[in-house]
Amino acid sequence: MREIKARTDGAMRVEATDGTVTTFMDEPASLGGGGTAPTPVQTLMASLAGCTVITLKMYSARKEWPLEDVDVRVTLEDGEKGAPNRWTQHVTLKGDLDEDQRERLMQIAGRCPVHRILEGENVFEEVETEPAGAE
Image (cartoon, rainbow, N blue to C red; front, side, top):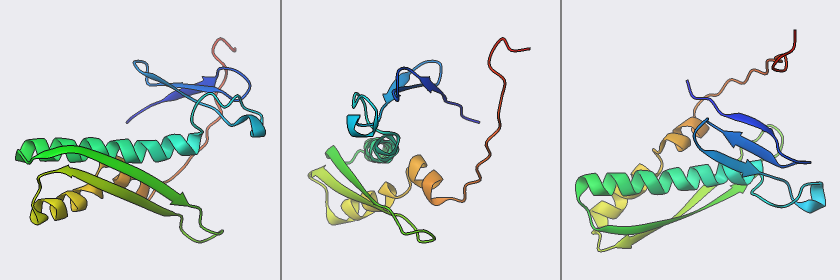
C-alpha cells in the first residue's frame, strides 16, 4: 500500500509528503489560493506525463535503443456527468529510432503505472480520523 499525507500550508496551499519527498499544490488567486504551485488536477496530469517519460526512458535504456529524450504533453477534457473524461498524451520521441521501436514505445506509453491506475477500476473510501493528540 502506498501513502501520501497532505495538510494545509496556508489558505489553499497544500503540502503533500510521503515522509521523504514533499510537493506542494495550490489554487489560483482567482479561486482564493495563492497561485504558488500547480493545482491538484494539474499535479495529477503531471503525474501521468512524468510517469510516461520515466517509463519510456527506462524501457528504451533496457533495450539499448537510441531514445535521446521524450516530451509528453497531457490534455484532459472533462466529461459531462456520467460520461468519461478524455485524457490525451501527446508524445514526442527524440532519437534515431526505427518505426518498430517508435511503435513499441507508443504502446509502452500506455502502460506506465499511473496510466494503469487511472484506467483501472478504483474504489474510494473517506474515513474521518481524530486529530493527533485528541483523546
